[in-house]
Amino acid sequence: NGGAPDAKNLRVKLVLLGDSGVGKSCIVLRFVRGQFDPTSKVTVGASFLSQTIALQDSTTVKFEIWDTAGQERYAALAPLYYRGAAVAVIVYDITSPESFTKAQYWVKELQKHGSPDIVMALVGNKADLQDSREVPAQDGIDYAEKNGMFFIETSAKTADNINQLFESVSVQLSCSRK
Ligand code: GDP
Ligand code: MG
Image (cartoon, rainbow, N blue to C red; front, side, top):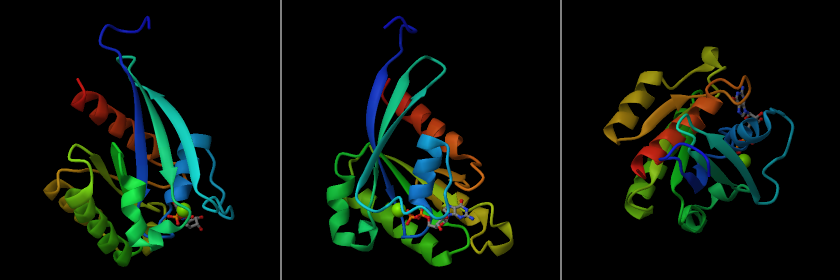
């Protein structure tokens, strides 16, 4: 394709998991469309969006992003959703300890039932709400390290670290498939 000799074009299924309200849909919209709309009901109907990232070695990664239509409330449906996913982005809200507990539940579920080579990222979203923070960043860092996951705090509202999240995932994917 005219790129570097080791360039590849990867197509990967990415799912977002986490409590309702943590900002999964807003993260996707920020990444794919560069927008944040606090009033939008983006999760009405199952939505499917794709976005491609080009890495420095000219590998491209096309993410096929599955966002739930609120099915996160029904744990029994989750396996249908994450089946075949190469990447799981597990999101919590830094102002909600309950959502952090729920994120840990999803990590365990994927360790038991996800693809063995799935790339998992732990994301503490709403990092713009520092004054209401209830989950210390260190707790996320420690948990991710113990479980061999990538960790980042993001804000879909300010766009902080949103691109970095997907870029880091892309780099991990391209390394694990060399
Ligand atoms: P989902 O249920 O996980 O898909 O959550 P949504 O993306 O629908 O977001 C739930 C609520 O959190 C909405 O009111 C968003 O405006 C708000 N929200 C999402 N991301 C952020 C963020 O980074 N910062 C702040 N302050 N609010 C956010
Ligand atoms: Mg949603």
